[in-house]
Length: 338
Image 1 (tube, rainbow, N blue to C red):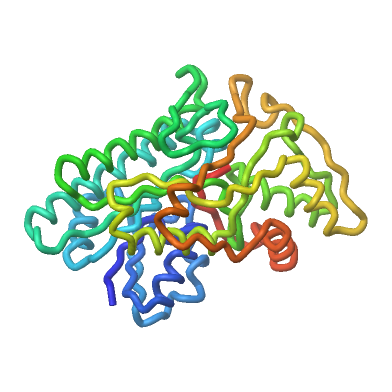
Image 2: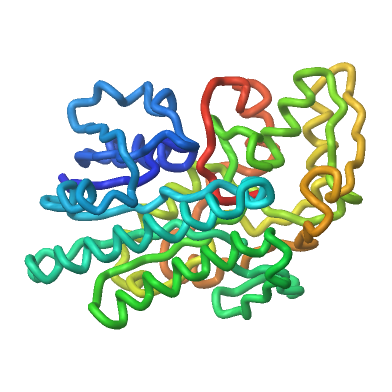
């Protein structure tokens, strides 16, 4: 049995990860300030004998130091949520990305100095946003990160996530702190809300209200959607792999679909079929907003490192979410993907 700390464990991905770790037989401590997560996401495990809850922020150094005393692994998911938050509250978003990561890494390094024989493996949840507006057909982990101008707040999200990665890898190089970094691409599933720009729950919510389904710009933006349980399985396998330490991995699905086609597939589950309408980015976000036309990961490194076998395809994901509901519950998402 391992002792695990999950920061941001009350969010969308964090809550599914917590459940999987408990099912594996680990003792799991979750710290979350519920700024974008909610305890209700952990309702099914809140009374589990191996579960502990801490109400607080991952940027509180004293709290983090106390929690790390007897921990084997840290999964750091506490962060800002999506590009929509950046567009409305950029200062808050940048601070909520950078500060907790710095605090947790510094605390881990000092713990490693005290207990060099018991290194704690660290997983950093990053985002496909770090690639910025790289125009390539697909993105390997070594691709250039191409951001727009600083007056466009949209790029501060990806730039901040990239700084998180630089910092984590610096601790690996300088102190041999065992870190694994995962760049999430559009993770979807139960408990995800559309509040922060997450497109699939937003479309399903609109369809349940009778429509119309709003698609930004012309709808020909291309994305890849992976079920949260498949992504959590990828995370757990990577953390068990010695080859993953000090590496960055694209995580998710590599099966592309346009947002317009996604909206059509959602609409086809409803009678009558709801209409689809288009909305300019300037109306949805702000006049300076820039989008990425194509976001497709190269998963070669992931497949070479773990046994990559997704259990869900997109039709199954949509069907599950239509039948079970997504953000119609009182939960919030901590997914870093659009």
